[in-house]
Structures are given as C-alpha cells and as structure tokens.
Length: 189
Image 1 (cartoon, rainbow, N blue to C red):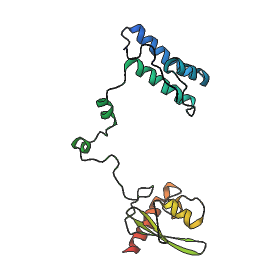
Image 2 (image 1 turned 180 degrees about the horizontal axis):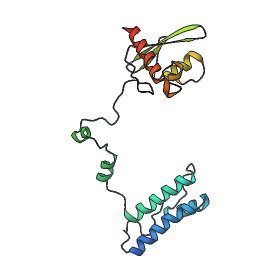
Image 3 (image 1 turned 180 degrees about the vertical axis):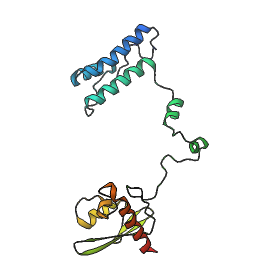
Image 4 (image 1 turned 90 degrees about the vertical axis):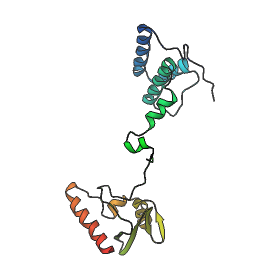
C-alpha cells in the first residue's frame, strides 16, 4: 500500500476569492482530462496511485471531492452523522429502524400474505409454493425469493413473479393479476 502525502496547503481554508477561484477552476478542469491525466493529477494532489478499478468518471469525482476536502476540511463527525440519518418523525424519536422488515409483495404491489399458496404447472407436474414470513417454501426447502424457487423447479433462471403469473406483461393486465392472487388466497381459506 502506498503512503499518501498531504496536498500542499492541506487543511488551510482558501481565504481570498482568487484562491477559491483557482480551486474552482482546478475542479472544473478535471472534467476535461482523460484517464492518464486524471491519474497524474491524483499523484500530484494526493500522492500514491489511484485505485485501478475506478472508471474515469468516478475517478474524476473522487479526485475533485478529495481536493476540496483537503482545501476546505471535511465535515465534522456530527454533521456527517446527521446527513446519514433518515429524515422522518420516527427517527427523531429514536424508535425507527434503518431498514424495516417488510412483507413479501409482487412488483405490482399486491401483498402476499403468509400462508398463501402459489400454484404452477410445469412439464405436466403441479408445483405448489407456500408464502412464508421469511421467504417461500417449496418441496421441503425454504427459499428467500420466488426467482430461486422458479430456478429450482425449472433448472434455469426465471423471473419468479412472471413464472408464477404475478407479474403483468402489460399494464392492462394488472387487474387480471390481482384477481389471480385473490383467487389463490381464497383457495387457502
């Protein structure tokens, strides 16, 4: 791992309009450089060599950000933490979870309740899939997605919603999909 050196004047906030203008011009000029020139700018301003896996457009943005951070200083930790927080009332009270669990749904928004049975005929055999709270059960195994169930049944990659007839091909068929899901749920009762 190469050691990075600080850019000249790192941590010093540009005070005069001409210093700020020069920094703005430098950042704008990065958009006109090719990959080799961006790598040279990286070495000049940040030291070391840039990550090799980054495409040119991303390298340019990371370089521009890092140059501005070295000139203006980074945001303090409290501000960074505040920016990462979701902005809803539940979070203000401290009771929200960042990634709330959700129930299985189709892409059209039709909810699949736990215990619903999805039925599909494939190669002359009737396959039944049970909707669970944490996935889908077929043939004694639990799968996290319908696409994995469809692959287990057919041996090839399938869109699980389309395989089980839950994904409408055209927008005019949404009511048909809803009726099919409702009929399956009625059979369950």
